[in-house]
Length: 303
Image 1 (cartoon, helix red, strand yellow):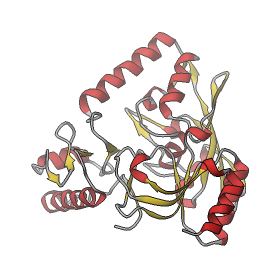
Image 2 (spheres, rainbow, N blue to C red):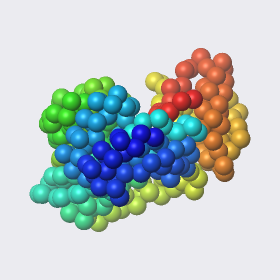
Image 3 (cartoon, rainbow, N blue to C red):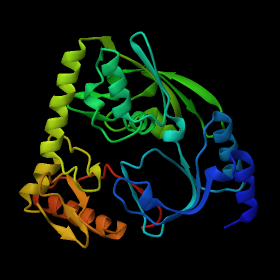
C-alpha cells in the first residue's frame, strides 16, 4: 500500500471515506471476494473526478461498484481502487411523471417511489437487486421490461472527467449492453419517464412479481442473480437442468435446485469454486447441446 496515495485520497474525501484492504465479501451479494487495495466512498462529482485524476496519474486500475449484485471478485481481491457509488449517492426525486435518481439508488427504492407517486412502468424493476447505475450499464430487465423502455436521459462522466448527458437513443441499449458499458462511462444520474397509473394496480403488479420471484428464485442464498446470459432461442436454466446439473456442486458453490440459471453460495464458497463450476457447466452444455453459455456475472481481479 502506498501511504502517499492514501493521504491524497484522504485529503480529497476525508479519512472516513477511505478504506484500505477492504474485504470485498462485505460488498457483493455473492458474499465472496478478497481485499481491495483502496475502497473509496465519494459523494460528489468533484470527488469522483479527483479520484479518477489520481488513478490516471498513478496508472492505477479502478472499478465502479454499486451494491455488488452482478459481481464475482477474485479470492485474491483487487489490486487497485474500488469506487463505491451506492448509499452515498442515492437521492430520488419525483417531478410529475419523471423520476430523477442518482446512480447509487436501488431499483427497489425507485420502484417504491414510483408506486407512492402512482406512476406505472417501473414495476418490472422492483425486485432486481441492483442500483440504477449498474442497471443503466447493463440495460437490466425482467418480466418483459427493460431499462431502455423507461430511460429518458442519463448523465455520465467519461474517463477524462467530462460530464455528458445522453438521450435514450444515444444510449444504444441492447441485451445486457449499452454505450455506457462499451465506452467505459460512469453513470452519475438518470431521468426515468413513467406514466400516471392507479396505485392499487401498481401495488398488485409489484406484489405479483415479488411472489413469482420468491417462488422461482433462490433468494434465500447469496448469489449474483442470473449467472449466464440468455442464449438466443434458449433458456440457460433449462439447458443446465437438461444436462442433469440441478444441485451440481463444486466446493461451496452450487447450481440452485430451485432455478438452474442461478449459481449460489451454499456455504463457504470461494470465487475459484464458482468459476470452476461455471466453466464445468458451460462445457457440459456446449458438449450436449452445442450452445455456448456466456457469463452474465462480471469477474473482477485475477482468476
